[in-house]
Image 1 (cartoon, rainbow, N blue to C red):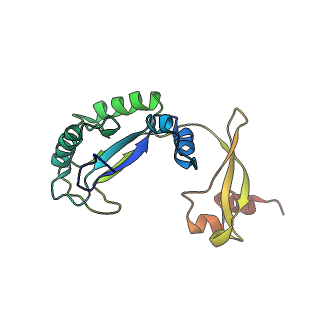
Image 2 (image 1 turned 60 degrees about the vertical axis):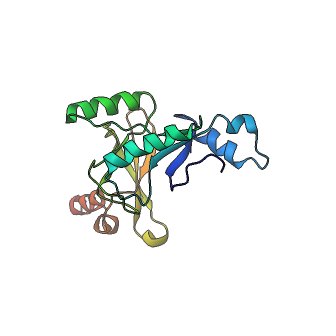
Image 3 (image 1 turned 90 degrees about the vertical axis):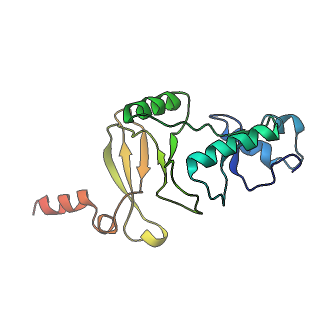
Length: 185
């Protein structure tokens, strides 16, 4: 694309928080609507293949984006946090504006393809009460055993949770074994 820096860039199209469905609609139009595309930004996170540590890559990336002088090309903001409390405060502020969370990078980490222990997604821990109201059957690899727990919040809202269950829990769901152990004869 004309005007893009001649180096590999890692980023994503962005329209704003809470705008993902609209962004997908813009991208999927069979005939592009120029006015819609002018609202999008290409947010750059990293420089694949760079030999610099992350903090230096982020600074270099900001310079590269500034030199390109394209209003729709932006470097994702990066800022070091001085303490855990500052990090938690920043996370809380962003989540209140609709963000999912933060992506944390080790400042001295070298770039590597794929997942890395140098990058961590930090999301707030939801803390709410719910009770198990049913075991839902598994599908595919989990056919014939527990697929998910159906939970109900005090408000009456129900939702299923299937991630985080071990194979042993799927084979003999904890509450089911509790009932079998205490069932009257």
